[in-house]
Image (cartoon, rainbow, N blue to C red; front, side, top):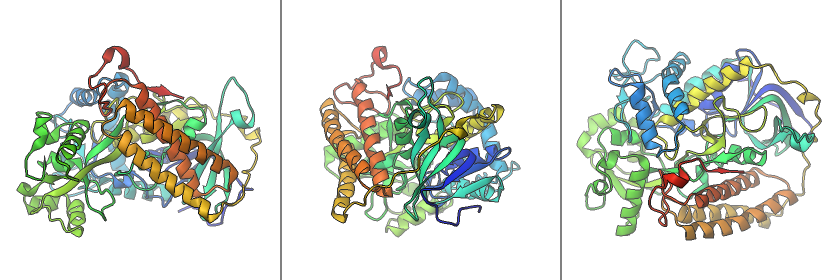
Length: 546
């Protein structure tokens, strides 16, 4: 791996053609394609393979089965999206899906075949699973560890590529833009980013012709989430501070089936488990979900999550259960070896015990607004993957369309960028080194952890699965106060990774609340008890905020 061995300091400036911030499927696929011509620098917040993609279990939805069609996948996506999907985007992503899958296979990804093998070739038929909202089996997977398999193949290719430099344990602090360095009110361009070396704590500059936000989501803004610790909304917050529009942040998808166990750290029970016949039941063993939707456990995630939330409030129980005992031990182990092993570590035998589950924040359908080429409102700044809002997901993402979107846009963005002339002139703009502040006293650092805990609990209690105007107003007032305090702390003291993340979390929380307050209806994932019906006349549109 071509990674920086020396400790980077605030006086350094690194130069590259392309700066990719983030190391999931969107960032690495993009880097590999851009490296066909140019120098690419990838910065990873932690280890290269530690990101949200790695934890994806279910798979990638695409039309590869003989009984499937583009029109069916498009219809399922639009139906799940609650009337807000951008039709052109849905058509393009679905139709370009098979080519994206082929590219992943060529990169060495081994999707599971019908005979149980995981060969990375097309000589055998893929084993396809069905997930909530899909009307046919179309989800390719690598057993129940699809994300790990994707990262295995992609990291291998990236580390072998001489045109790609990977720098691990680097945290992007803020984007470098011309409106701050050399104001030109006719346009605002991105020049790169201020980046913190987490080993030394120093902040330095990476200057680039193009910058790409591939930072994933912000599930850690909630108390319970399936997301890893790195999902603190860094890219979304940086993009917003740089002047990008954001949209649809009220549509945070809550995955209905996360393992409810003290040491499980919100371990996700893949939707594919329900796709293979898993049934959600209450403590009495009743299949209660059919009271809320005829599709029962196979209804889209928003419906299932609300059904569970309602059942828990009605019963007062801390969790419900997912029952797969009828599948038999052999089939469970064959299809879900990783989930089976994790449950066994918690003393839960899937073949004999019902799995305790709760909903948890999982995926944001909103993000930084981009066009069909991944461009944001800031010149030379692109956004891909969960951090972006392309219009594909609308008010509710169809299961396993997220990896599909990331892969397709990695191809679309790279093709567009490589077809353009390289921007010139930005290299002559002077950007001042980061100014180091004074160190905070240890007792003041408690404020950061306390603020983070406050925000996550406020978001869970007031901006969770079911909202109301009163809850949202209360959350807005309290988070606004916290944001002001964190902002003062940020400018007064030396910046630390914890401070950067808490600042980003607080800003993303406030943006989410603002979006939710402005939508006076219930649609898709967003449910406001004061407005339980959908209102197409006033709200069949994206929620934009600056």
